[in-house]
Amino acid sequence: MLIFDSHLDLAWNAIDWNRDLWLTVKELREKEQATNVLEFKARGRNTVTFPELRRGKIATFIATLLPRLFRANSMPAIQRYAAMEGAYGAAMGQLGYYKALEGQGRLRFIKDWPTLELHVNEWVQADNPKGSKGEINLEPPLGFILSMEGADSILTPDQVQHWYDNGLRLVGPAHYGVSPYAHGTGTIGGLFPQGPALLKEMERVGMILDITHLSDQCFDEALDIYGGPVIASHHNCRALVPDQRQLTDDQIKRLIKRGAVIGSALDAWMLYPGWERGVTTPAASGVTIDTFVDHIDRVCQLAGNTQHAAIGTDLDGGFGTEQTPSDLDTIADLQRVPELLRKRGYKEVDIEGIMYANWVRFFKKAWTKK
Ligand SMILES: [Zn+2]
Image (cartoon, rainbow, N blue to C red; front, top):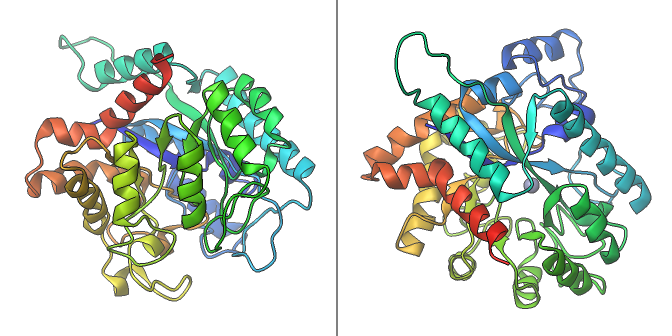
C-alpha cells in the first residue's frame, strides 16, 4: 500500500549529519560504524534512506528545512546558528540539496495540486500494474512537499513570499525551545511580537500552518489569528503519553474542527510515558509499532471517523533505532501498519486514508480552494 509520511528531516540528515541517503540503510549503518563518527547515539542506527523509502512505498513525504538558532538549555543537536542570517543561509543550503535531487530526476518537488494528483496517480498505477506479463511498471520518482520546522530562517514576516516563491508550502513557527516568532516545545509562553504578522502573511500567500512544536499558549493564539489550512505534521496524544510535546484531546478536537490532519510519530520518546533519552530502551519499554497505532486510533475515536489520522514518522529526526519501536528496523516497516489496523477492525478504505489518502485529500482542498 502507498504511504505518505508528513515529517522527514532529509536535508538535515544529508547535510548536518553528512549522510549519503542513496545508500541502503544497511550500507549507511556500516559506514557510520566503520568510520567511527559515533558522537551521537543515533549514529549507525538510521532507519531512512531513499532506497528504503522506495522499498516501503513511501512515495510522498513532507520534507523539512531545519536550521535552528542556538539556544541555551535546549537538547543537544548538531548544528545551531548564532544569528538568523546564518539560519537563512543554512535553510537555502538544505533547499539546494532537494533541488539537486530534483534536477537529477530522483525527487519530484510537489508545489501544487496538479503535480500531487499526477504523482499519486503514477504511484497507484505502479503499485497495482494493470495488464500482466511483460508490462513495465512505471518508476515514478519519490515526491516531496517542502516545509520548514521552526521559522528561524524567515528573517522577517515580509520574507514569507520569498520562501513561497522558492517552493516552501508549510511552516511550523517553532521547534524545541523558543523561536524568533513563538514559544515551542518545552517552553511556556505566547507568540512574540512578530508572530501574528508572520501568521497573517502565511495566510495571505497560502502557506499552510503546521502547529507541531508550538507551546500550548501559542497553539491557541495561532489558531485564533491564522485562518488558513492547519496540520500537525508529527504529533502524538497527550492522553496516552503525558508531556507538553503531545496534543491534548481538546487540542485534537479543535484541530479536527479546522479540518486538520494529524500525523502520528514513531519517536519512542513520544510513545512511552517517562521515556528517558539515552537510558530507556525499546526492548525494556515494550514500545512496538502497535503502540504508535494506539495514537492513530485515538485521533480516529476523537473524530468519530478516520479522516484526520495519518502518519508523520519523524524517523531519523535526531534519533535512530535506540529510540524507535522495538519491532521497527527501517521506515519500510510502516508496511506492517495496515495489518495492525485491520486487526482493530478498520476497513480497507479507512486504512488507505490513514496510510496516504487523508493527506492527499487535505492538500487537494488546501491547494484548490481560492
Ligand atoms: Zn520535530
